[in-house]
Image (tube, rainbow, N blue to C red; front, side, top):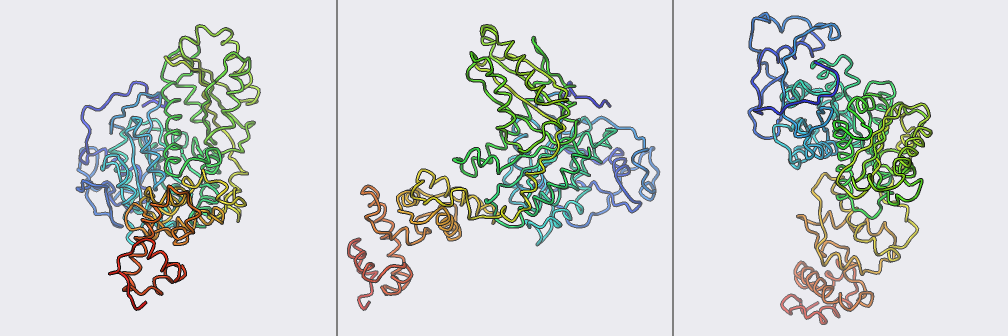
Length: 598
């Protein structure tokens, strides 16, 4: 079995779960650490996400001429010196033709969403593991590629120890599912998770160890060079629990040390805090969807383009492999060049790639070991733009100067577009120390404080709805519930309310609305009554019919609740009794709902 990229991988003719055979017993034997064996690979009869309890029933492997009947009584052999024959297995066939055959493990909600983005691009060797069934159910990948790590009442906690315990209990189940899904023709295993959650942060180190053991089983001599990690960092001031930055700080520092020591390769850090500042107008759900697609898309581009030839300069599979295996941190970037007539336009695009990236900033470029820079232009542009080759060469020269002693791998390609894009991939970076230190500061957890704290909300009305959606998404994420949305009437009231306070006032309003709403759609009834019963003079004339409709409904409900007794209704609505009487008359509240003795 070769160590290089798998360029000629064929699709499997038949995909399915294979019965337990002698090679499976062999895998058990190789992967056990002690002499106390529990046969790990138990086939699930459940058609849904696989759920395993805390104990594993013993199902002896089928005996063959290669193994003694008392095989499981023998002590484990030293993995580094154990020689075993590997039978080639395809596993689930990829639909993606890149220079490296990847396998993906996503843990926790964030990790599951990330591997789903890769699955959508044709990387079918994907596993999603979680302690929460609801998160697995929301992933549109085959049920046979999901594993629910049942932890009883501990499920869904942000406690990292519980996440680690879950993987420890289900280690053999994960290995069994990996063998069925990945096969033996995998070149590299990537583990994805979000730093902050209990399931992802707690399980990541154990999953890295499992991935290394699997890499060793399929013949990789140095598993550390064949297992990498994609980690997302939470945004400061936008986390729902003080445990989130605490978890993130602990696991991010641990993985950074592993990457710097060459124990994983590469470590890719997606920085949600940096991205939130780069794209402040995007709401939470569209933002993370866009982040996942962008990260997966960049990763996919380099894997695919390194499998292609070029009539100019080729960035080949070995170039790509050297970058992926260079240990440390890895960043990627893409920039479109607008003004090709300017002499430094392409070199400036290269610089922008290093600054405007979704990945963690504060990286020391002097530590770079390997770097790739690829220019892709339309055929017509490449043929007709005068001096284009000189500008591209100058961009490569600038990159060499910036990267100091790094090895620069170049590529020039053409396509059928009418634009020119510059892609960069940089490996072997030291960890972003300053960024990781921010995770442990007291200022990181401020769920109600934002950069625009001093501004009154009425001075930034164009941001009200996007901010409201952000707060709702934060509530949904914190309580692990489905996203809730504002109906049209609720949006109108939020837009035209006078907002005497700042962003924090809106945050509290959305917190209340999320808590009071049963179902997914938030109606005006769930908004604070001070918004609904604000002086109508504060609203434009065209919004008054909507306001009247909402007020009529809420007053009617309150009168019904208190059997028509107005003082109690006024008190619950936080308005004066005189104001309530005026509204009852103005809105023509039916007399049947009003207690005349009030």
